[in-house]
Image 1 (cartoon, rainbow, N blue to C red):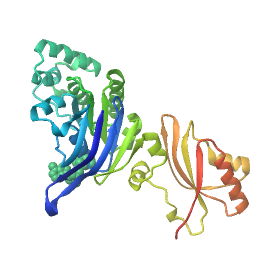
Image 2 (cartoon, rainbow, N blue to C red):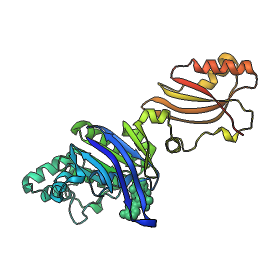
Image 3 (cartoon, rainbow, N blue to C red):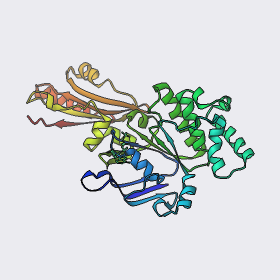
Image 4 (cartoon, protein in one colour):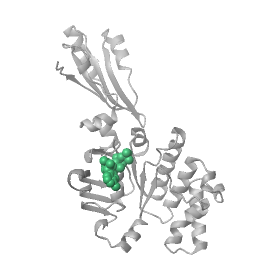
Length: 334
Ligand SMILES: Nc1ncnc2c1ncn2[C@@H]1O[C@H](COP(=O)(O)OP(=O)(O)OP(=O)(O)O)[C@@H](O)[C@H]1O
C-alpha cells in the first residue's frame, strides 16, 4: 500500500541544515497496522507527513496506493489526500462547529451533497461510539471523545490509509487503550491500513503487526513486532525495547554469565525456581527485561552461573532444553 524509496528530508541549508530523514526505505502492506517508533526528534512526524506530502521530501519516492505522491499536481494531491487521512495528538477539531459538522467538513470540501454527508457522518459517529454527541461542541468533550470525532472525520472520505501521529499521547492509559481498540476494530471492519507513529512501545505492542525503528533520521530496524521485541539487533532498537537494559558491565570481572532469550513461549516458565528445585542449582538474576505480547513471553534475562563448573554446565544444559528459550554465554570485558 505504501512504498518508500531512498527518502531524504533536509530542513534548511548549509551549516544549519537538519537531516531529518536519510535514505528511508520501507513497505507497508494493505490492511496492516504498521508502527513507527523513535525517540523525540528521530524524524517520525516528518516521515508520516511525507506519506501524504504535507511535507515534501528533499529526494526519494513515496508511492501510496500505486501513486507516486511526489509527482502529483496540486489538484491531484488534494484528491490523493482524501485517500490518506490523518489524526493528531492535538485532535485539530473545529471548535466553532458541532461534532456532526466536524465530521461533515471533509465531505463539504469534496462536494458531497449536504443530506448525504449528514447521513454518512451519523453512520461514522455510530461506528466510533459517539452518536449521542452529534450536537455537542468539541469543548464539551473529553480527550478520548475528541479523538473519536477526529477519527470519524478522518474516515469521512473513505480513505485507504489512516495516519496516526501520536494519536494517543495526550490521553490517559485507559482512554489510550479504548482508542487503540477502536483503531484495531476499524482496521478489521473497514480494511483501512493504519500507520501509527508513537514514542511508546506499549502502543506498538498493543496493535501493530510490524514496526520500524527510527533513530536520528535513519531507519535502524524494521520487521515483525515479535521478532524485534525478542531479538533487537541494533542499539537503537535495544534502547527502545528494553530501556532499562541489562548490561554485564556492572558485574565483577570473572562473572560467568549467560543471556537467556525468551522467544515466545506461551507462559513464562518459572525457570529459576525449577532450576533450583529440580537440579539444586542456584543462579542469580543479574538483570531482566521481559515482555508479554499477546500471551507469549519475549525478552532477555541475564543470569550469573554458579562458580562450580559442573553446576554451571548442568544449569546451562537445563535452560537450553526448555522450549522457546535460548541461552548464550556472555563474555565479560573489564
Ligand atoms: N519545519 C522544520 N524546520 C526545521 N527543522 C525541522 C522542521 N520539522 C522538523 N524539524 C527537525 O527535524 C528533526 C525530526 O523532527 P520530527 O518532528 O520529525 O521528529 P519526531 O520523531 O516526530 O519527534 P517528536 O516525537 O518530538 O515530535 C528534528 O531535529 C526537528 O527539529
